[in-house]
Length: 335
Ligand code: TA6
Image (cartoon, rainbow, N blue to C red; front, side):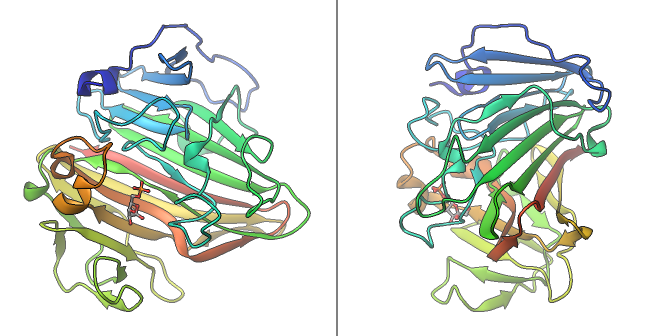
């Protein structure tokens, strides 16, 4: 599949614009179209009134692309990614749930959410006000669609994708719809398109503690004295917030594509109200050697992407019945 196809996705256009609906549904500032790809899987195309566009694949609710009103692609999707539902999509924004990595070998690497076909929800149960003025769609997953004997809990997830002229916001809301607590991890595995990794720096994490999976002691917290991260080898770092604190926000990725801001936060809502959750941030680039082992990563693709991944992965989140944990990222091309 050519890169152009990966972005354009041969699709039959079925105009299906969500308009109106309950008063709580913000005005759709643009159009939301559903179509099917050649594998019969639903694609959702968002077109903001500014001209910004995004494509979301129902397999894994994976954002495949976001193009700003000025025509700049901010999300990297490998041109050799498999879009037939046979495996998690290589690129875009895959979703990690209910585990990060494979601590439970009975579950797939990064859990089952990115390997499941999500439903396009006609309207969300509530509309976060941060989506005002944006073109928004919501996809849903629950235990009647995807579950596993190793993680059999009743749950419901709403995943909001909202776009404005230079910004994409994605928000994962995990609800415990059962009668008992469950523990989970989640992460937005965002592939940022940066054009050339050798001309890219990542700032905003300097001085913060991280676990270095590329080192021979991945369980020892480290600090990086450098003012920003430059990637010239395999990088796989899990940055964690300070005790009782949060990681600095945003992360800024300065690259040939431009200066890209990635802001992220997490919240826990339950019967007592809503409070911040300390989110972690993963920075990953497989570099040449590990990229060679990824059959669905296009030749040299590691030079054109870097993953900056907001998540709840350092330990697990305990969610009580009726509670909701929300993880949000806001990615913007800065002027
Ligand atoms: O990005 C963090 C990470 O856990 C890396 O360790 C690497 O495994 C990456 O995810 C990609 O995982 P995947 O299963 O998509 O090949």
